[in-house]
Length: 290
Image 1 (cartoon, rainbow, N blue to C red):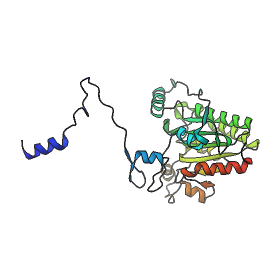
Image 2 (image 1 turned 120 degrees about the vertical axis):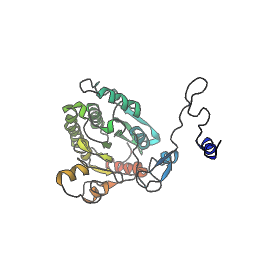
Image 3 (image 1 turned 45 degrees about the vertical axis):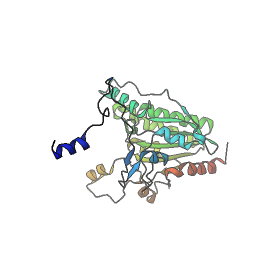
């Protein structure tokens, strides 16, 4: 055996039973990813440490996307969140080729049955209605079920005189549902309007990205607009705008910090400070614990 063959055998051999199946022919489970690279600073991060830091890079503060349920549980006192309207789901999608399969894939990947989670919990002792869109479900697109759940949680909050906290994240309307998806813009906006007419507080939290029909409806109707750092916020994306206007956009255009400078965003709040800041605002507007 030559030198090259010896090196190849030592360094490139497969560990026994690591890739091949065992005696029973079954492949061993692949271990979960133990590290991840930050999209912004490119640092290699330990996955468990990133999870413990609410998926915020400890090196540069970059906010990774986070699941809707995880976000709401972190917001509620003692993690006690009561989900509502879970029976509202999208139709089978038989009218649009491939939509049913896309729904099945989104449900398998996200572990959720729809793209938004809504319910009630306490924030610093104050009952609050809340919802969050999940990026893993067809990129948080808004179809019938998403719009209906958001509408119902606003109606519930209006009836019980609860403030609302909503976390927006979306690539826009769910085109597979056609005009039905666009109707959700008007429906959710009307529900927000009735909640506002009742003199109740709505805090809208814009996360990365908040675009399309979501940004053009309930996301920008909050009494107070909060954003996570560096979140992409707007109707059309910057590339589309540049191609349409044939103009170079300013640095940081459509990022949360840029929008705050222009008066479209009231506060930029880091994820780790979100519960305390929202609790402070809610207590100020409601007069304290219920």
